[in-house]
Every structure is written in C-alpha cells, then in structure tokens.
Image (tube, rainbow, N blue to C red; front, side):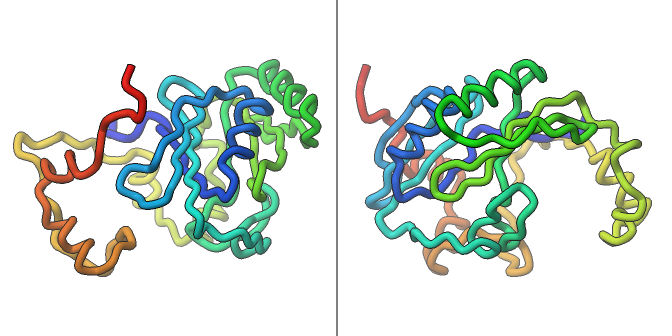
Length: 225
C-alpha cells in the first residue's frame, strides 16, 4: 500500500474572533475545546484547537492584522459550489459514520438557530450544508468508500488533461520504502511550492538541520499539570 496521511490532524482557520469560533464549534457542532494558547513562534497570535476526534481538530489562528473583508468569489466561496481564489479553502466537510448521525447533527445545528440545507444524496455520500462564523462554508457528510471505477468520469478526465497512464498512477500511487538514511533537504527550486517567509530567513530555515527545527519553538503547554 502507498504511504499517505491517514486523516486530517488539524485544519487551521484564520479568525478575528476566536471566541465566536470556539462558541460555534463547541455549542453548535459539539466539539470540545482542547487548547488555547499563544501560537508558538508567532507574535501576537492566539491558537485554539477544538477536537473532532482524538486525532482530528479544527484549529483557529487569531492575529490582530487578520483581515475582516469577505469578498465572495475572491476570499470566500459563500457556499459549497461557489467560486473562490485558487489555493484557498472552498468549503470544509466533516464526517459522521451513519445517516442517522448526520440527521442528528443536522437537528443539533438547527436547534442552535443555524439554517441547514439537506441532506442531499450525492450517490457517494449524503451531505448537509450550513454556514459558520466569518463566512465559513461548511458541510457534514457520511458515505461508504468511493469506487473510482464508477466515479471517475472519462469526459472530465480528458478535459483535465489526464492521460490513461497518469490516471493509473493517480489511482494506484507508488509505494515508498523509507531509506535507512534520512532524505536530505532538496536544493531550493523556485518552480516547486514554497512557504512564504522573508527570503534570507527561509533560506536559513531550509539549510538548518532537522534536529534544529525539532527544537525551534517551545513544546511546553502553557499550564503545567
């Protein structure tokens, strides 16, 4: 089996009102607040984590310079089918195990005064749709494993410029055997994706040994127990 992540550890959402986000994700969706602290290595920034499962969280990042503008089609999609700038979050979908769980969570959300559309039957899953604070477009879905033989449309494959060989590679990714020696940081290539930091700082970070990055920020909780 190919090596790949086994889920989402956390999705970080920028906010100007972390209290409102925590209120929504705990009271409306039933998650539990697990962390609220100064973000490690980031000045003036609150960081909060709401637990969805023991290994899956929604995180929030509040900095005083986070912008408040919501421009539909640019900064926000507005709904799960709307347009938005490439590389930004179009919508966020949560999972539940059964259709009954989906209906129960829909009713919980509605009981808090939040309108919910659905469920809608997409064939591969059932979904409900609603909005969150600061213009979030949200979904809750439930469904079985997706069979790619039924759900990869040849017309869309062709329009996306994906060849038959590429499709085989995409649906059956190559396995990875970790070498005995850690793989070295690749040389800087501007054609590759990069995090955005001031140039000299980023080059210095790329040149630092992995052991240095391991201890680059505090790893102690703000309250000792």
